Length: 295
Image 1 (tube, rainbow, N blue to C red):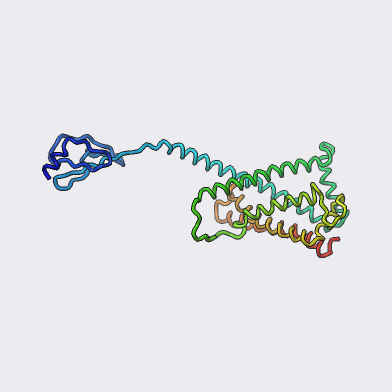
Image 2 (cartoon, rainbow, N blue to C red; image 1 turned 120 degrees about the vertical axis):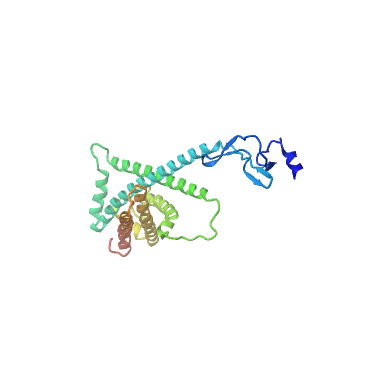
């Protein structure tokens, strides 16, 4: 043992390696700062009999730490901004579908009342705007809101997918409602229906029954007298209701309107009431047309 100790004297301890040295009285050793602002003489870390071991701690510089923190903060701010865009565009669509539903219900008033309402929409803002000008402004706003809504949803979904590289072995929807699980594919369904709806009643004005397309009321009745088109419309309205049910809650949460139990309760009920009103309101006209009440 003594020979081993004497051979170890004068050797410089290798970082990260246990180096033996004599436990006898020697010159004072420089202090090394440890965690918690404590100091201990360098080399006096552990003693076993006559032999002590010096553990030399090493640190590896991490130049990427600051950069990752900054990029993480930017990603968080970007995520919040995307959620705010989704909430704001969602509110715009809720207001639009409520107004659109009111216009659809004019069909119960008969042919002339419905067509007068459709003509009134084209004359909003006249003479300051050309006929149909206000409608085109509304369409541009809706197109921009739709683009922002879809873009934000796609980016957030991609980030959530990238954040979890390993899939769940057992996937359980603990606490998740059916409406929340249906948000992604329900949104895709609504988007596809919207394209057809615009071709059917606005842009292309396709009359699947082969009748005229220049009369809004007759185009409405001819379309919903076709059973498969009415079925597609009702499925789309069910998807819209589910989307609004969870979307209203999510928008309220993003906008900071669910900070206590009562506010969360009110947001959930508001989402449910809006979903029921809009789904039922839009479904009444096609059902009554198919039943022969509206002709």
